[in-house]
Image (tube, rainbow, N blue to C red; front, side):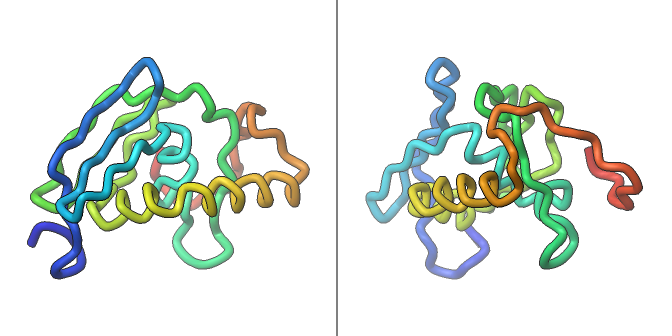
Length: 137
Protein backbone atom coordinates (compact mmCIF):
# COMPACT_ATOMS: atom_id res chain seq x y z
CA UNK A 1 0.00 0.00 0.00
CA UNK A 2 1.58 3.25 -1.12
CA UNK A 3 -0.73 5.58 0.81
CA UNK A 4 -3.66 5.29 3.14
CA UNK A 5 -6.20 5.54 0.30
CA UNK A 6 -6.06 2.99 -2.51
CA UNK A 7 -5.18 4.63 -5.82
CA UNK A 8 -4.18 7.94 -4.22
CA UNK A 9 -1.24 9.85 -5.71
CA UNK A 10 2.14 8.90 -4.26
CA UNK A 11 5.25 11.04 -3.85
CA UNK A 12 7.81 10.78 -6.62
CA UNK A 13 10.23 13.18 -4.92
CA UNK A 14 10.61 14.82 -1.52
CA UNK A 15 13.03 17.73 -1.20
CA UNK A 16 13.76 19.60 2.02
CA UNK A 17 14.60 23.25 1.36
CA UNK A 18 16.15 24.35 4.66
CA UNK A 19 16.83 27.96 3.77
CA UNK A 20 13.28 28.69 2.56
CA UNK A 21 11.82 26.28 5.16
CA UNK A 22 9.60 24.31 2.78
CA UNK A 23 9.14 20.66 1.93
CA UNK A 24 8.73 20.21 -1.81
CA UNK A 25 6.69 17.16 -2.76
CA UNK A 26 6.10 15.95 -6.33
CA UNK A 27 3.27 13.45 -6.73
CA UNK A 28 2.53 10.74 -9.29
CA UNK A 29 -0.44 12.69 -10.68
CA UNK A 30 1.83 15.60 -11.63
CA UNK A 31 0.97 17.79 -8.64
CA UNK A 32 3.90 19.60 -7.06
CA UNK A 33 3.59 21.35 -3.71
CA UNK A 34 5.89 23.50 -1.59
CA UNK A 35 4.64 23.02 1.96
CA UNK A 36 6.06 25.44 4.56
CA UNK A 37 7.50 23.79 7.68
CA UNK A 38 5.32 26.13 9.75
CA UNK A 39 2.16 24.83 8.09
CA UNK A 40 3.29 21.24 8.68
CA UNK A 41 4.00 21.99 12.33
CA UNK A 42 0.76 23.92 12.94
CA UNK A 43 -1.30 21.14 11.33
CA UNK A 44 0.73 18.18 12.60
CA UNK A 45 -1.50 15.09 12.73
CA UNK A 46 -0.13 14.27 16.20
CA UNK A 47 -2.29 13.95 19.31
CA UNK A 48 -0.35 16.87 20.80
CA UNK A 49 -1.78 19.17 18.13
CA UNK A 50 -5.02 17.44 17.09
CA UNK A 51 -6.01 16.09 20.49
CA UNK A 52 -7.76 12.76 20.93
CA UNK A 53 -11.11 13.91 19.55
CA UNK A 54 -13.09 16.86 18.22
CA UNK A 55 -12.65 20.05 20.21
CA UNK A 56 -9.37 18.92 21.78
CA UNK A 57 -7.08 20.64 19.26
CA UNK A 58 -4.25 22.81 20.59
CA UNK A 59 -3.70 26.07 18.72
CA UNK A 60 -0.02 26.24 17.79
CA UNK A 61 1.87 29.55 17.96
CA UNK A 62 5.50 30.58 17.61
CA UNK A 63 6.18 28.17 14.75
CA UNK A 64 7.04 30.65 11.95
CA UNK A 65 10.79 29.91 12.14
CA UNK A 66 10.57 26.20 12.94
CA UNK A 67 13.15 24.08 11.12
CA UNK A 68 12.89 20.52 9.85
CA UNK A 69 15.79 18.64 11.46
CA UNK A 70 15.00 15.17 10.13
CA UNK A 71 12.49 13.39 7.92
CA UNK A 72 12.27 9.65 8.50
CA UNK A 73 10.31 7.20 6.33
CA UNK A 74 7.45 5.28 7.97
CA UNK A 75 6.88 2.12 5.98
CA UNK A 76 5.82 2.86 2.41
CA UNK A 77 3.04 5.27 3.31
CA UNK A 78 4.37 8.21 5.35
CA UNK A 79 7.20 10.28 6.80
CA UNK A 80 7.83 11.39 10.35
CA UNK A 81 9.47 14.80 10.67
CA UNK A 82 11.48 16.03 13.64
CA UNK A 83 11.12 19.77 14.08
CA UNK A 84 13.57 22.15 15.76
CA UNK A 85 11.11 22.78 18.62
CA UNK A 86 11.40 19.10 19.60
CA UNK A 87 8.09 17.99 18.09
CA UNK A 88 8.51 14.56 16.49
CA UNK A 89 5.27 12.65 17.05
CA UNK A 90 3.34 13.49 13.88
CA UNK A 91 3.22 10.88 11.12
CA UNK A 92 2.44 12.51 7.78
CA UNK A 93 0.89 10.02 5.34
CA UNK A 94 1.20 10.69 1.62
CA UNK A 95 -2.53 11.50 1.62
CA UNK A 96 -2.06 14.04 4.41
CA UNK A 97 0.89 15.71 2.66
CA UNK A 98 -1.24 15.96 -0.49
CA UNK A 99 -4.05 17.49 1.57
CA UNK A 100 -1.68 20.05 3.16
CA UNK A 101 -0.22 20.95 -0.21
CA UNK A 102 -3.49 21.22 -2.10
CA UNK A 103 -5.38 23.06 0.65
CA UNK A 104 -2.69 25.52 1.76
CA UNK A 105 -4.68 28.69 1.09
CA UNK A 106 -7.73 27.45 3.03
CA UNK A 107 -5.58 26.07 5.86
CA UNK A 108 -3.67 29.35 6.27
CA UNK A 109 -6.99 31.24 6.39
CA UNK A 110 -8.40 28.79 8.93
CA UNK A 111 -5.27 29.21 11.05
CA UNK A 112 -5.54 33.03 10.89
CA UNK A 113 -9.22 32.80 11.86
CA UNK A 114 -8.46 30.52 14.83
CA UNK A 115 -5.69 32.85 16.01
CA UNK A 116 -8.04 35.84 15.82
CA UNK A 117 -10.81 34.03 17.67
CA UNK A 118 -8.37 33.02 20.43
CA UNK A 119 -6.87 36.55 20.58
CA UNK A 120 -3.53 34.83 19.98
CA UNK A 121 -0.43 36.06 18.18
CA UNK A 122 1.05 33.80 15.51
CA UNK A 123 4.56 34.50 16.81
CA UNK A 124 3.84 34.21 20.54
CA UNK A 125 5.66 31.37 22.29
CA UNK A 126 3.57 28.32 23.15
CA UNK A 127 2.26 28.26 26.70
CA UNK A 128 2.56 24.88 28.40
CA UNK A 129 -0.80 23.29 29.13
CA UNK A 130 -1.33 21.95 32.63
CA UNK A 131 -3.16 18.74 33.31
CA UNK A 132 -2.58 17.36 29.83
CA UNK A 133 -3.28 13.63 29.87
CA UNK A 134 -1.45 13.03 26.60
CA UNK A 135 2.12 11.85 27.07
CA UNK A 136 3.29 13.23 23.70
CA UNK A 137 5.80 16.09 23.55
